[in-house]
Length: 482
Image (cartoon, rainbow, N blue to C red):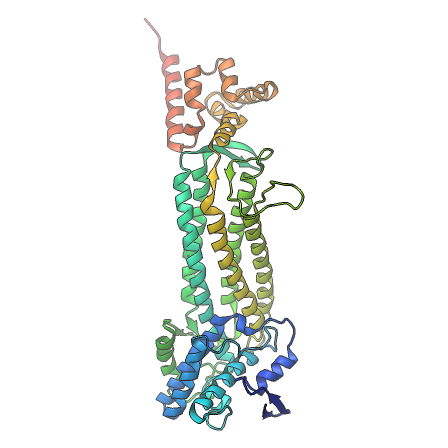
């Protein structure tokens, strides 16, 4: 055991831990969730990037000795490389401002750096506040690390979305010629192709990818050098100008200085934009997953227009029942993202005066949304989208039997006459095509062409067909033999 002191007295710490008394007090005070900041390795890594770059900058302006800089950098590198992942026990829920996060990092680096220099833990050579936290404040370190971490989380999310985009491209092409009935208000509408339906999902994902890439750029504008309230008080002259250069070097991220430090510390609306984008993405994913549940419903008493891959039995009592469990998982993840977004909204709203102190709850919820969405999208793509098969016969039958084919008759002969055909077809349980032929509106050859669901999915083709019919009628009525 070793003993550390602070303003409140002494505490005993296990010999094998690298964190110190402030971390231990945080563990005692905030043991709420059983979840710790170690669950967010990108945050820990970005904090370590900042500590390393700060040491390099402070050395550059002659505020740190060479051996102090080297020891801090080596300790930070160990954190960056994941060698200290069990040294961050602070609960996610903690005092506002996140000072426990910053001090946990500072203490681990200080004890390890001291060990590298002297062979033992302690602060006689490297102190967590005096050396590791030099020219910094929790108030500029944590929000900067959060934005950098968001960049990395977005990078992972984009990989999942890119894979989904590729699969949706394949499915859109594969289903290009499969005709089915569209539905509005869950009722039969006019024909489309299954490929056209999937092209909507594809277009949505492509648009989301573009949005996420745009947000990534905003995550690179940070507030390092602002220190406590934006004035830069406590920094060594020349430090702020140099740290951005070093931070780019160690993190390989093109970070830049926020235009207005006071704005950057007080307002956290960037997280609303990011969370809002994740919520927007979730709405489309949930809608897609819901559509797939409907389209695959059955197999004998539902729509059954597509088959989803079977991944597990769907009932403890009904043998052979298979549920659309991957889309259902995806939908539940989206619900969770909506809840996270609400929490982030409250936290951003509650910024006070010179600082938003609610960053711990912001980072918890936004990083959770990133994590579950990224994993769920990958599973949804691999275990569902990639293996979807079309039930072509059912799709075509539904399209041919739809009463909404009457829209062609309405275009050619007027709404009232087309409505009569619909009512008769419904009462006699016949198709619109049969009704039009029985009424003498179309010959069988014309009906086969004009009411062919395949033709009706092509806007250009259907316009050509209708124009040809109208032109023929005008010629017939204007012809007067001598």
